[in-house]
Each structure stands twice: as C-alpha cells, then as structure tokens.
Image: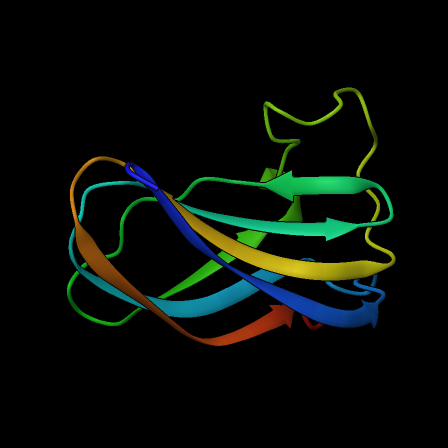
Length: 111
C-alpha cells in the first residue's frame, strides 16, 4: 500500500531463549523510511525500528531488549522468546526505493 511495504516469513516453531538478538546484513537504494524488523511468538508480536540502510552492505546486530509491542498490539505483555513462528520486515515512508537483507541469524555473546 502507499507508504507501507514489507515481507513476512513463516518459520518452523522455534525457541529463541538461548539467544540475545538477531543480526543480518542490509543495504538500500533510495527510500528514507525506517526498517522495522518484527517477530511473532507465543507472547505476541515484537518489533523495533532501525534506520534506513546505507548503499553499501552493512552488518547490524539488534538485541531482543530493544524490541517492543507494536502500537496496534495488546499492550503490557512480557516478551517471551518461545514459540517463534514469524519473522517480518516492514518499511514505512512515502519515498520509494529498494532494501536488501541477507545472512539473517540469531546471535549470542560467547563467554
């Protein structure tokens, strides 16, 4: 729709409790809207906003602690990381452009 676009991927039900966040590479051309990574699990939908990607491939790590409930979602839940079934990426903004995302993975800090 105008001012809004995204991609949704359904996952095999998974437990992300052993991980601290998600990381991936991204780049873009044109567009000025933030990128919104979002996931859905047993506790609801969770999302965060990151800046529009630069033209060159850039690695980014996003801790789960930065994710929050979307404004349209029921509020006041506690985020859990079990039963994850979706990973989505959305872009908002009036400017056109293209974004690429690659090498998506979960991460944890090794001791």
